[in-house]
Structure formats: C-alpha cells, structure tokens
Image (cartoon, rainbow, N blue to C red):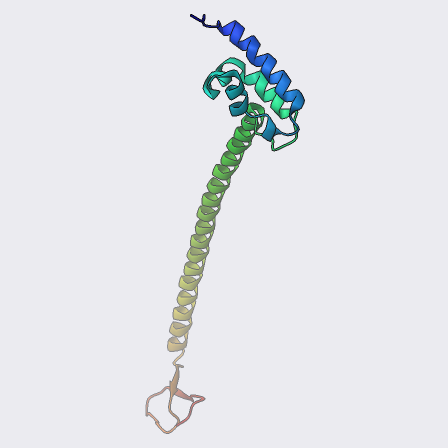
Length: 159
C-alpha cells in the first residue's frame, strides 16, 4: 500500500518538476500548468493550489504573452474608477451648463418683452400727442378723400 504524500512533500516534488521543465522550456507554450500537472500526476487545480505564485513567476520569465497580474488589474480598476468619476463630473457640468443657458435665454426673453412693452407705451404716447394736436397720420389709398379735419398721407403702395 503506497502512502499518500503530505502537502509539503507534494509541493517540493512540484517545485523540482517545475525547475526541470522550466530549464527545458523555450516558450510559455512549453511550460503550462496542464503539462506540469500531468508530469506530477495531479490536477491543474491542485497545482495552482500548491504552487501558483512560483508557477506564475517561472512562466513570466519565458517568452510569450504575459497575463495581467494583480498589480496591473488593480491599476486598471483605479484608472476605470477615475474615468467614471470624470464622466460623472462631465455629465453634471453638462447639466449645469444647459440649465445656465436656459436661464440666460429666459432672462433675454424677459428683457426683450420689457423693451417691447416700453416701445408699445411710447407708440401709444406718440399717437395720443398726435391726436391732441388735431393731426393724425392715417395711411389710406390716395384715391379716397374724406371731409374730416384729418391730414391724409398716401401709402407707398398706391392702387
């Protein structure tokens, strides 16, 4: 009956196998978790459980695509959080700017409305002054005459 290896013995065996395979490997494709696990007679899950950091360190020394490490992922998460914050600020600024532009447009409309009221008042005053002086300017066709005390002014569009 063969005796089971302890975790410490299995770990030492895996480290030895990994060192041997790493020395022979020319790329990351030659040094995979599946190949090492197969050589040791264990599952890849067990391999990762026992020697993940050592495996990743040795594999990263070989040429081939580099897998993102925890540090890279942490930096990307921080950058992502910063970009999300900038997006929130930009959206808030856009909302604020739109509200400010609407406020400015409303103020302009109110100023124009006030000026319109003032001009209508001036027109009304000028008409009253003309009426008081018995002079009234009326635009009428040139061929139409009246007998009142009004002065007729012909329009530019004579018929």
